[in-house]
Image 1 (cartoon, rainbow, N blue to C red):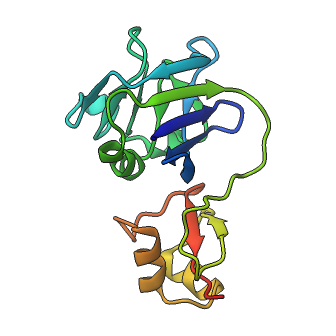
Image 2 (image 1 turned 90 degrees about the vertical axis):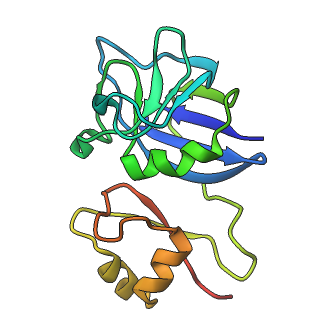
Image 3 (image 1 turned 30 degrees about the vertical axis):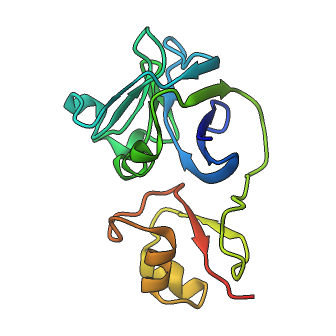
Length: 176
């Protein structure tokens, strides 16, 4: 079963498939005057071509029109900048959009917690993760971990290798 969790405190969205963490994404949340609502909701509407102010994808989870969407203002990710929605990088929302059926539970909470490591990686790999830092490139990250850029791109299904965002979670392939 698919499930989405959003932690307002850490500004992270955790995407689950078949009960296991698939991936964690950095997000922007609501401003103090228009906070992202806490509670349990469900995706009830999806739009692959929303208004440009909502990036490239839209998934509504409250009837007050709160949703999970992309952005053409990537510098707002990891901030409290929205009118109550959960804002993602366009490539991240494009990744989860086809995997998220209408009816998917969305749980929004606020608490400190440690980074969760997905359990779905193939057996032959360790579960090492790396969060992109400002100035990182696919090449510099690959060099740091002694792998090829092609391995890093393929393993993480990176759609736009020349456009990595700080905070993006990458899996580092390490053969056991």
